[in-house]
Length: 114
Length: 114
Image 1 (tube, rainbow over the protein chains, first blue to last red):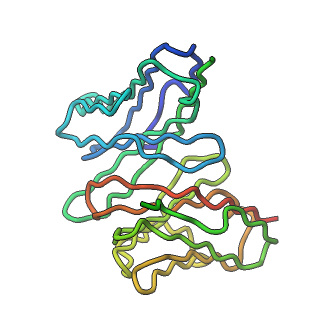
Image 2: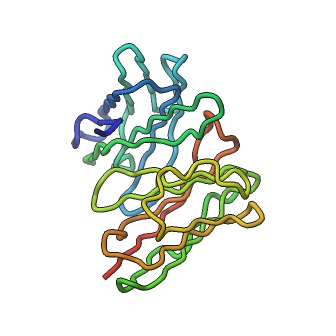
């Protein structure tokens, strides 16, 4: 079964509104990374949050991590049409020098209407 | 600073043919990863290089796939012979370290096997 699962699968909002996407995972991790993918393009790294962190901010982005609930959320404030994209969470478990291979969820498709 | 680049952006080949994908990581990044997304499924890890050495190749699907990173700079991923189920998008990522570091992705190579 997949590690990461985003919720909702699709989200449509008006420009200026906030968008919240959630990610749940099943096994223990030590880091979680959020990515954005515009249609047909590559993955853009947004934020990395470690398991000992609860919240991180970057511009209009806010990421939270609750390891007890095995979940994370990505909040985009004051959304813009340019935020329209798919958003993915990817979990990693790197202990003892092992590879931090990321396990991706299926993504949330965000549409911001102008 | 240039990001991760991949070549070609799109490749269409017939079943049984050979294709070689190339990835140039961000300059100075010793760690290079290959991932792929096939059949609309989740993005999945293939393998990880540290410089020219394969650190983890647990995600490689079978022996038709050969990854190399001679000299520890760019990497190639060869599929020989290609099968229909190999169609998908192949992503390359690089990071500064092997542990909990941001992984920066390239635009991907879309492979279509007919």
